[in-house]
Length: 326
Ligand code: ACO
Image 1 (cartoon, rainbow, N blue to C red):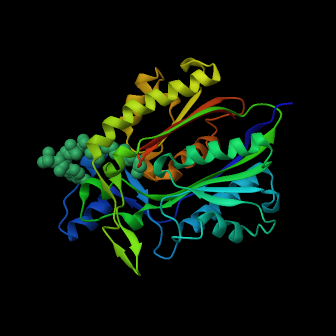
Image 2 (image 1 turned 180 degrees about the vertical axis):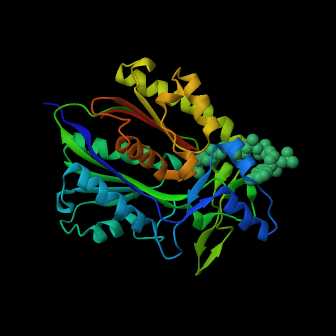
């Protein structure tokens, strides 16, 4: 009998400090940087984001989201036999945030744990990898997390980027199943666009060489994103033998409401079938899709048996999508 993987529980966590556009604009004004709630809302749909306290790391946020997902799945931490964390803001250069999370969760069974680095596509990449490992029998109960403290890599003198991002974490527990949960996925990367969206700095000889803050050509990213998101959604639907009309919910990467509206239009999906959390979360990179998924599950929007299409795009350039039955 063929083995499948299925989401058994979801969880998420936002750090308590909520920063509205007006609060951020006032903070930026003190540094001589001009922005406004009107500009941010009109161009992005973002009203607020959450920022973690300075001592809080991605693994701390991941821990809270993971505990919620385990509870929802009815699993104990020791049941986990694979941990994959998608993050671009790891606790350390090494070891992985996944191994740090493993220890914080008290998982002492020696299960594999590793990070996936695909920026905002990270969660779709991580879920695809975990699904493949469950299908081959390498894992039976995988914890897949997206966790970020993007506030650490923001340049607060650059108004074109610092207003867009926030911190948070989302998690799912993926279990082996006789019936299909994850139906199909599609992943891509194109390294020629590395410079469009990057944090160029790196550690060398005890110092940071290059700028350790986020750089983005927003307009170029916007144009690329809209095209590749449509293509990958269609590729995944084709692999699953399904049509656009069979998608109950689209859970897109939460970067900008205009990108989501454009993608929905191209997929002939009304906006009331698109999960939108960017207004309250901002762009939380690898955390954005699992945060939005958990939000919609807990709000009673996404129900068991429904078809959910996840899709992400981010630095690299990377992009991908994944179709699942809840
Ligand atoms: N407040 C006020 N004015 C601003 C701000 C701001 N925060 N930021 C830019 N402006 C100004 C610009 O200086 C410009 O002024 P000018 O016309 O006098 O030169 C004007 O607003 C228009 O700027 P644009 O860059 O043309 O604005 P645009 O409508 O393209 O919106 C944005 C910018 C929001 C960044 C948009 O391009 C976007 O969302 N791009 C996609 C970004 C994205 O999705 N990134 C995440 C990918 S995921 C990952 O991997 C991290």
